[in-house]
Each structure stands twice: as structure tokens, then as C-alpha cells.
Length: 151
Image 1: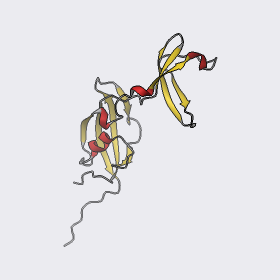
Image 2: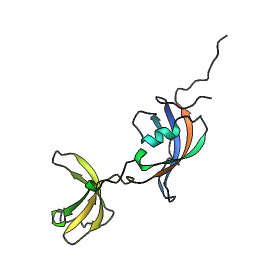
Image 3: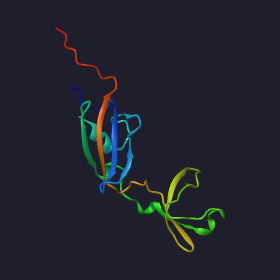
Image 4: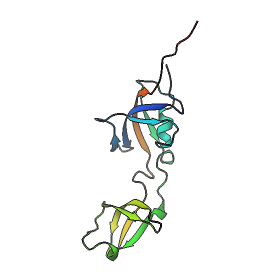
């Protein structure tokens, strides 16, 4: 049977969980995820997890945070003056916002704490610093053809 290798385009059903079992994403009820293995379209640990799988195979992989979204970076957590928020916006923990830097680049932030004078914003990826668990099922190796041996 053909095994997944770097450069293959694959279709995978997945169920992503944190190590405590909390689901953060799943392809259930949707089309399988299609991507090129090693093409930088998914996190490194996901690429590594599907490499070597065969069509129809199911497995569970644990991906350490360094092969996922990296470590939590303290410099991505910042204090923002509360009086600089729009008057009609009430800062609340968990609220997701979009900010822009001096160059006009937009990036998402989440409010993690609200104090009297400042609001603490976290620009880290929500899964940074977390080990991830994926249940994988390889559905297809796109363009895969049966091996034909000519006499």
C-alpha cells in the first residue's frame, strides 16, 4: 500500500484536542482537510503525524507545542490603556479584537484581564504553549494510483 510522503497531497479527517480532552477543532460534518505534506500548510507535527500513513488508517498523535504553535511568548502580552478603547466598547475577558501596528499590519488579540486603568491583551496564538492531540484518519492520497508492474 502507498504510504504518505513529503510532497503528497492528502485528505485527512481529524479531531483536535488539548491534553485535557477539550476539543478545539474537528473536521466532523465537513469535508476532510486537504493539504500538501511538507508544504507549510499545517503545523509541523500534523505533517509528521500523517507521514507514513496509508489510506483508511486511523491513529492518534500527540504533538508537543514546539511542533505546533510554539511557546507562549511573554512579549506578545501587553498592557493597553483602558481610556484608548472606543467609548462604546466595554472590555471583557475573552473578547477577541483586531489591532494594527505602526506599519498597518492587523493581528488578533484576546483580552485576558481587565484592570482599572489598563486592559491586558494577548497576541499569542490561542494554542501557543499547548501540547495537542489529534485523532487522524487518512482518507485519500490525491492522485494516488495503484502500482502496476509491467512484465
